[in-house]
Image (cartoon, rainbow, N blue to C red; front, side, top):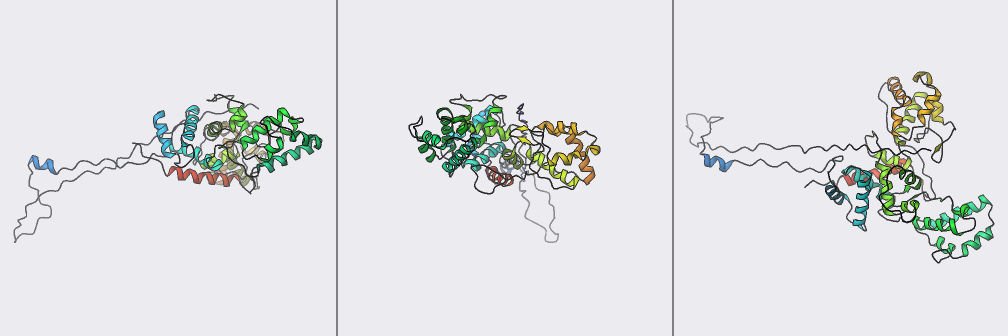
Length: 417
């Protein structure tokens, strides 16, 4: 599938500080003697002051009260960008200087403006996905790996005795594969294990050719996304072993994770929808809103998962989804053929979908028919499934958790010196 990574809409207009200064007023000196037969004058004329006295009592105009940087207010230049990042970055994280360098390098290389909003968004995802661990620990990882291996032995009909004998042999790091699996704690360790299994063991392709954990590092970014991104945007680091291994490093995960989160244009009114997209796929929040409106128009209960097409991995299939069937019932109302709609729907993971005839005519019809402007954004309703997930979690849960961290970060936005 042709992969396209769209450039970030670099509009971060800074707002000037408001001038809330009030004019200073000098006290006037009035004569104290008042005629007992005449009431005091309500607004007496002050006696003129000597020039020297007037200058002595005049008060200077106070400076405007300093205000924190606004969320989308960008600072200009790398020096100010580093300053802002340092002010927002948590003080108690391990290797704070290393985190700061990796985050700043990602922003600079990806041409993302240095704003409180963008910095806080990236840091909120890091905190949620890894609690600032460079190589996150996955609870129960040995059990996950043994379970995957057992599934593959069954799937491919491999002789179990041969596999057991292979795992008892020494691996490139000196330990047996049994020992390495039992000692697994992090994704990076698991990735290195699968790479060795792939090249060293009989049936290695069947056992390790399809790594069950496809996201890694402190931002849990996908290997597939990283592979696609490097085809259209230069990676700022030298690749030491493989691109896949880079995803499991702190610098690689922060770089690709930041790109996935921020390096594409949206019209979302709140950052929470980017967080949902980060979990569910780009523009899932836009597409989930369309599904919700489509359900109201056609009086159907449609799944709001942000996927209008059916996919095999990242490749669209010819299977017709419920959302497509519902949309096809509106061909006459929208004045479009099914073929045109289907061609437009294939752009659902890109910004261009919002400019297609299907999208624009659908919302024009929906707004008129339902009597008011319909939502263009909604949190996708997806249950999260992964070998690493042991609880019942959803995309909405993820987005709200990250948004809470994001809001807390914004509250610490500093005042420019």
